[in-house]
Length: 105
Image (tube, rainbow, N blue to C red; front, side, top):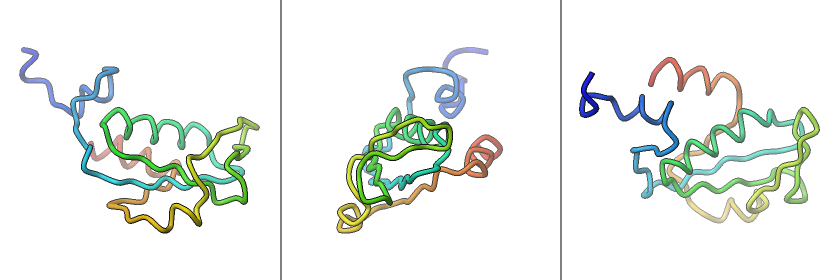
């Protein structure tokens, strides 16, 4: 396969330099205590590699949350503060979403 024939979505799965440009998208990713850390981090990472403006908001009363395997994650802001902004998309970091992304992209 010639490099020019490689699908952009395929590159994003296997290359550190994603070719998607989502810089015009404002995306909210809410997290809270007990969130699955892998689902949250992978979604946030993929969207930020695609240059999306991602806001990670804690649904708790502080920025730091303790994920399901006791990993500590720090949000950008609290959900109350994030709710004052507008978003193109709200992404919930749950396992079925990763399956959806894998199957449909």
